[in-house]
Length: 310
Image (tube, rainbow, N blue to C red):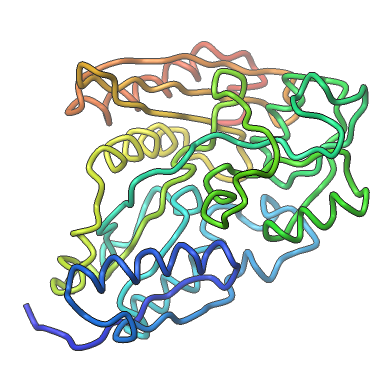
């Protein structure tokens, strides 16, 4: 293992992405006994950041927020990259590895609406601003009268659009709001009503597979329980080959007896059709259990669901 005297973190430039990168920066510096200044934060604009006027599903979806960071990591411009795990493709290049997943925050979505504190409080025909197919489909499942309108941008941009009256409500991840010290905004939606995206609220760090020094330094931040849960959700997603074009939700939790409970949901984009279920097993069975649950849900789904998977 070749020691280093400095490291470079790659991140997107949104306030939330920077907050997450600084969490990793502080954690790695503390583990190594370095001053924080010895770990540089480099900002990259990704394809997902550049596309603001159209749904990401039209451009390939998942991976658009990681592509430029992956390239910088593999060609050595950065030593590690920090990601929101829900944006990370389920298959990584062999030269790259997930070295750590940080402790998970609140997994729920929050409803942001000037005149409502719950989904039921929203008026008939309310306009829901979201660019997430999963959130849009779930809201239509809960209330078919809702009208989904496109809403792109970072947290503050979406809040500004809401304030201008471009929608009656929007949805944001509770974890992101908390990391921005904005967890007073909106009302949390119970997971029994709306399951989150797979790996929502988890931060992941990728490094080059051969970079033992950085891999070990970052590995000290790994939270085993979160990593186990996220791995199960990503296995569920991988079996479905999920992308931003497919509304998929999943949540794995560790129970008091050590078992893993995985809940999963697949929806048609218009929310008119859905199938959901759950599975429970030992931690070492989590990946296989997730794959089996995905296959079972496809089998139970009607034609509209099966059509999503060819």
